[in-house]
Picture 1 (tube, rainbow, N blue to C red):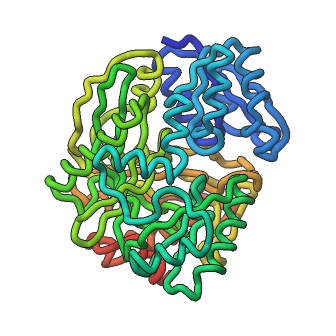
Picture 2: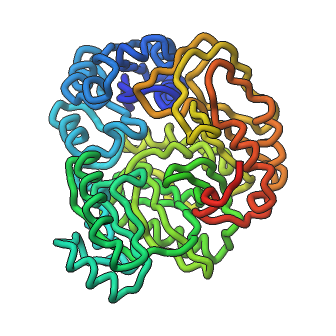
Picture 3: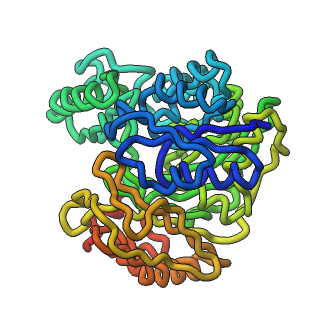
Length: 444
């Protein structure tokens, strides 16, 4: 087992990893930018190293600084968390070259699943259903228009190296194609340094359901059930839950087997999530694989009593897993709490938290790095907390979440708590009647 792990991240996920390290008897090293000097992950780690100024490019994305921090603290492993360098093959490779274990898949696995067009071709050979579309990248506009006419509109073009909805455009007719192509490539090039584009048939009003998997170094792979992430805004998830209200026993079996086949197709190691689109007839299509721990991993932990971070660390240390599949025993819901103003086009709301009261009680979990007196920096993602509840049934979980959101007080900044509360009270959400288009017509 590792003696000391450096967490190459910040905020709540860094704190989450630190807590598990403490329980496992592993020393932890926090890294922080000058904007995060007062963050709780810095306070609770065994050691902390400042790695640069506030901009991410000069701190949390600075590979030489991270490696240097690991070397001077004698860390023998690095946990990347999510975001930042968590799916960066170069970072994983650099860790290995410096004798530091990257807690995650190998660079080859990251590359094969990180490039969406390559991933699509890879899973096709494993017999996993994929959305009809281009065989690899689109070379030019004319090829794209011709293919779109063959498979039928609407279609969607996506950045091969993309994520979070960037470099993505829905096209409903040939007249829209060229303008969408140009803007998508421009956005992708600016965001990822790669303007490669591929095309898929656009599945109208699908569910977004993902399967959590874990695999060890010996070929054992298991799935840990699903999470429904359909409630999202501009491709950013707002609410996640397990089990999905749309799930059936047969669908879970088929999606779980498909996710395992995806992992086996690249000899996967570590935790990961295979994301699918599911249409109204419960046909599912591979969308992408995230080769890291997910923001929403607590939802899975709560329904099957399973510490994903602990198991992720054990797998990286060479410990075998059982390879069994899990069925949810309870219902869990997570609300992502962002420092944004939902009444003002979700304008970010950094600043000083003057007062804080976190909800509590049976079946309630709050993952956060904020406290009264903490100043939210303007430099990073606006998510400041995750509120997770669990109960015996979905109805009970929604009622519990509603109570907790009413109880959650964060003064000094605007947050998405009022929006989340309105969603919990929405009749369609309560009935499980929603798709990825839910927020497009939601009135708040």
